[in-house]
Length: 432
Image (cartoon, rainbow, N blue to C red):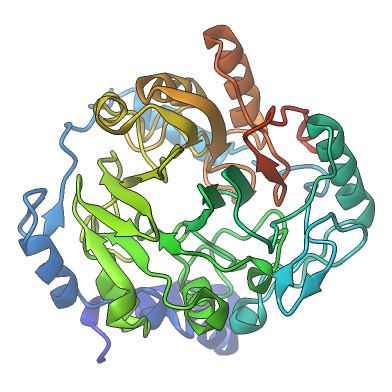
């Protein structure tokens, strides 16, 4: 497929910006692959938007108006940018990973001093050279074991559980519901950017190599931002025969990106808000979210969403990336109650109050959804806001305690069985 003018223009602008600091060789290395990473051309995206009641003139819109910012917000925002706190941990982030692998599948347990695979063989073009500190990883296993009363570990390669979840960092999670597995917003790349050399970089390696994730029944994507839709990860999942024909279930327009990257048409399911798909005995509902989209200079050309995942006995709600919205209460009334909600708590700022929730808003959203246990996502892995690294989870803990909301706070890579008490041990303060 021919490259579109928009990706080419963005690639050129990126190259010019890099020229002053890196020379032609650095420019070439940083700009390599940018047009393809940016996804489908505008004309392909327009086709999806034209058929939706939530789009006008090729762009999708939130149902709630944006929050008007006070003029005083501008100097405050500029000062926050100039004096931006690091947003990074001071020590290596603890991780829990698989002890052994057989034929690429995890057999469970925890790693001691093993190198953390930030990427897999199929994502070698973005492979991280970072390794996890052996002592930190061992400590993570001890903390998780103490919190749950049983041996902690990464994903299990056996049968999927009744209600379990593995958080890999940021918004990447593996849900196990009624014997099925759903992988949501998988991002194993080193950077969340179209460039291999420029853009937000991981604050910790992926705790589990992508080829150690057990076979999944479906892959969910919430929207097309780079920290939720990652080209190398998509390619690796498609190339891995263990996942068979597991479909990518996505909001409208993202199918065009996937097709541009070689995902077979038969493995793409695109839905508008309130649309449903039946996959392996699960009902997957595309739920309204309050956000935006775009992988280049043009915004809102694909839809954004949250997801309700309903099995015969259990239900979970994956928030993806969203601001607080009245749609949570509607989702709770229509598809709830939920045994588990996975809601974003990081990258909030006064500069964008309606696209990222604060931790306190996430607690309110959980209650709107009629959730039982809340597991926070969208924090710890990438520095995307102005707040300190551990501030989101610290504020969440205080808000949840006031509201009487049970939390699940796993170490990245830790699989937790939610048929028992969830882990709540504080693993973040020692490394904040």
